[in-house]
Length: 404
Ligand SMILES: [Zn+2]
Image (cartoon, rainbow, N blue to C red; front, side):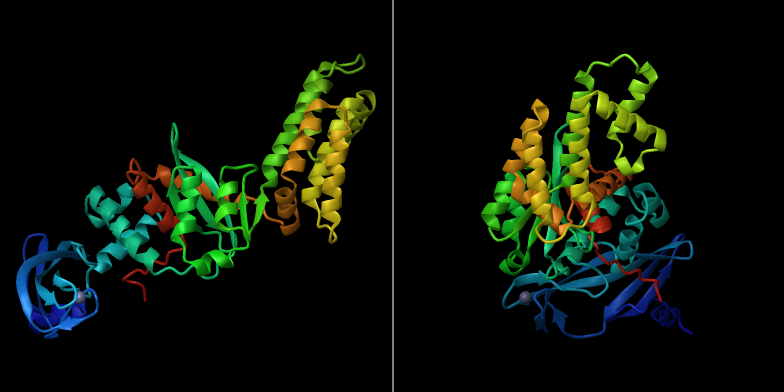
């Protein structure tokens, strides 16, 4: 068998035939000739006349211990619509110096491991890995469809201290990242809304976010039809802090050992259903002897119940109203001011309870982004980090060339 025939069978380069193979010390050069006479413009048109030719090499997947290169005289054509452009090739992305197979392998690895491992295994430079990721992700994002999107969450993430932020938009139903925007302002989220087609925007029903976030008004302006959900986690944090403050301001009555008093602080924070018997006894004793603490603790537990249980239709609304009234009448200043905030954000707090939506999805995404950030893909540039977020969390499907 001739060497060129052997390489034709081995490589099976789409649209091209091997004409010559040069095996050197550690490198193999495979020369290619196009199989079809017609040239393909990136716009899809096919043209017969060649404008000019220029030799180009593409790095392909290694063969044994050798680097494998494809050598081909790439043609330019004069497209009636586009002018003079470089022909499109089936084995490489436009402008790339690596084959599609090589790049797909890099993308697949980058989804799973750190940059040093990828560049060592693939025997290419860090910068090459970064360039491949940026180009590959752009192509995969173009092919992505968002027509099933209807419940999204939005949050900010600090990716470099101090004050470097990204706005991240996630899909509640697939758990994937839909969009990443620079900064954490109204404009950041507005960029996402204005870049989506109307069909995507009108299909949206719910947007979840942190309480009173800057994203609220811009969402109302662009999507007046959606329900905004305020995350319950932060509301519970406010309430826990208020309870803590009531406790700190209270004077320890004689009859309580110092250790008991300290233990009480944690017992009060713990959910009632998670208390041990002796801690439950301690809490109910303090609730009797320190009436203010008792009232604050009851308010905290009632708020927890709002998020813990399924409610009958209208039940959550009634309970939330009752809670606000009780807090307003508690004669405890921190809870009185909380009742005002709850009244102000009533609709969005209630929507989150009734729809059972929290921003926990975004918290999870943020934790994963911090891990990606630690893998060292040269994230001084927000663009590279953004590409990595899409690649690892965007639900993008990378197909391994070697997969059977
Ligand atoms: Zn064209």
